[in-house]
Length: 93
Image (cartoon, rainbow, N blue to C red):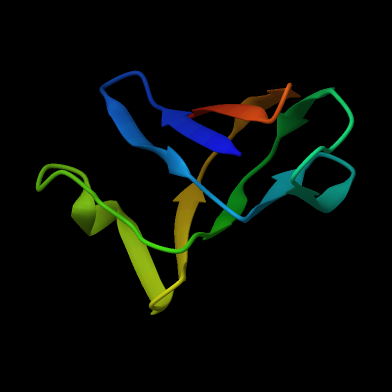
C-alpha cells in the first residue's frame, strides 16, 4: 500500500509500506493492506512505519527515528489521516 506523509512545509515520506500505526484521538490504531476506508483525526504521538525499504530526502531524514531496517517512526503534534483504496495520506503538524 502507498503511504504519503505531508506537512505544511514539505512531503516528508512517500513510498510503499507494509503497515502504519498512528496516534488517533481515541487511541493508537494500525492499518494494513486492504484496510477499510477511514478518515480520522490524529493527536500528539508517534507514527510507526513498517516497509521493506526506506528513502528519505536529506532535508527530512532527521525527523525520522530508525527502529530497525524495516521500521521508522515520526513524532507528530497533530494531524489527520485518510485511507482509501490502499493509499494512506497523513497530513501532519
